[in-house]
Structure formats: structure tokens, C-alpha cells
Image (cartoon, rainbow, N blue to C red; front, side, top):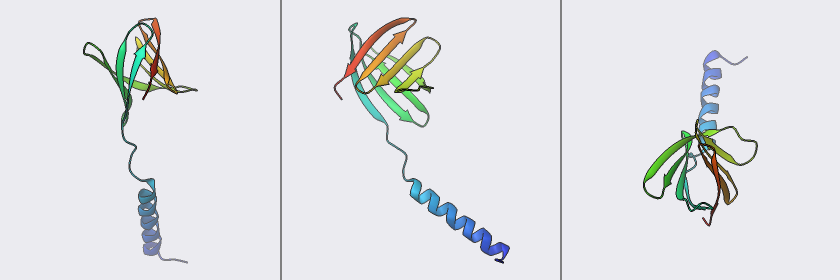
Length: 104
């Protein structure tokens, strides 16, 4: 039977290997969108915390936390939703919805 000290060393070594294999966090990603209603916006998607920072042409900035989604990436608060699927997105503000596209 291994000594308690050897067990602790083996556990520590396993934790170090696990952390090394985890690798660096994913970098933020940015994409520019043009919407059907004429809205132009830039979205920066962050991982820590998981959120989308939207900069709307004209200077308004919103940060939406990631929300549960079965399909695509969904970011929402009480009045605004930005839901991406591939190169398309649906942008909804206070119930007014528009479809957006990105070339990025």
C-alpha cells in the first residue's frame, strides 16, 4: 500500500498535468453585422465572463450575458436579445426584431 505522502504527490502531479493539458483560454472574437432595418453593429464575444459586447453605429454600447440556447449563441437581458447562428443573427430590442448578417 502506498504511503499517504506518495498518494498526495501523485494527486498533485495529476492536477499539474490536467492544468497543462487544459491549455490557454479561447481569445475573444469580433464580428461586424449589418441588419435588415439598417442597424450596423460590432459584436465582441468574450469567454470570461461569457458575454457579447455590442457596439451599435452611433455609439451605443450594450453588454449582454450569454443565455441558454439549444441552437446557436444567445445573449440576452430583460429587453434585448442577440441570437447568432452561423453568419446570421437576430437582434431584438424591446420586442422589435431584425435579422442581421456578417461577412466576417
